[in-house]
Structures are given as structure tokens and as C-alpha cells.
Image (cartoon, rainbow, N blue to C red; front, side, top):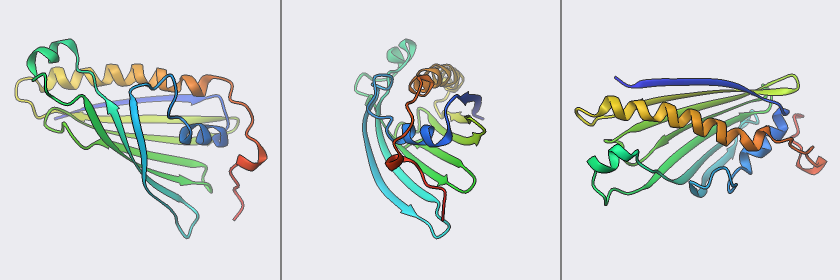
Length: 176
């Protein structure tokens, strides 16, 4: 049985600006743990939804207690796949990401839904955490919600800054 984490927040910027910040978010000083970001594929569907898959490489520092339990040669890099769907008609973007390695130690599936609401963008972030390490699954599952909450606040820092208006050439068109 895994753990479930959920948070909701309002980003005080319009959907267009949040979307642009999302695609341009790496590299940035608030996310130094992200080493690489590669687009695996990107497709525009017939109904004008943008589908994307990205591969991210992130560093993963173990909690101090875990450094004593797990071997020192355990890779500190985590490979993450991120699927996203941008729907300009409903002004919604949904991302789903999950780790490709260290799945015996821990699997995290995260879903974020960005939804336009008047002058702001509502973000609902959910995560499902599970571990297959016998005898240690509870402490392992307990750590990510705390770090996810902390990372959630830090990763939103660029969005909480006053985002400048997008130049017309970068604005997202909603017309068919």
C-alpha cells in the first residue's frame, strides 16, 4: 500500500504566462537538481491538443538515515519520464511523471493539472508513492510527501515572481 499526497495552489499569473514559464523552467536557480531535459516526442493532434514526452535527469539525495542503509554506489541520478497534454480549448495542461529507475526503492507518480481561472492559474498536484523495500517501506514512503511539499514551494518560486507580459510573438493563440 502506497502513500498519497495532494496540494492545491493558485499561481497569480495568467494561463499563457504559466504555460510559457513551464516550458522554459529549466535551467533555473530554484531547480539546480535538474541535470538534463530532453524532448522525446511532441505532437499536435487533430483537435489541436499538444502532446509531449520529455526525459528528465535529476539528482536524488537520499535522507541521511538511508545513506547508512543503502550501498554507496547506488546511483544518485533519477531518470524521469514526463507526459503532458495541453488543451488550448479548455485552457488546461495535465502532466504526469514517473521515475524509470530505483523502482524497487521507491516509485513516485506525480500528476499536475494547471487550469485557467479568471486572472490566475489553479494548480492541483498529486503524487502516489510506493516502496517495495521490506521493513523500510513506511519510512521511505513518509519522506517524499515532505520533500514534495518543500520542492512544490521552491519550484513555484519562479511563478510567484511577477512574470512579465509575454511578447505578442510568444503569446499562445486560442483561435483554430
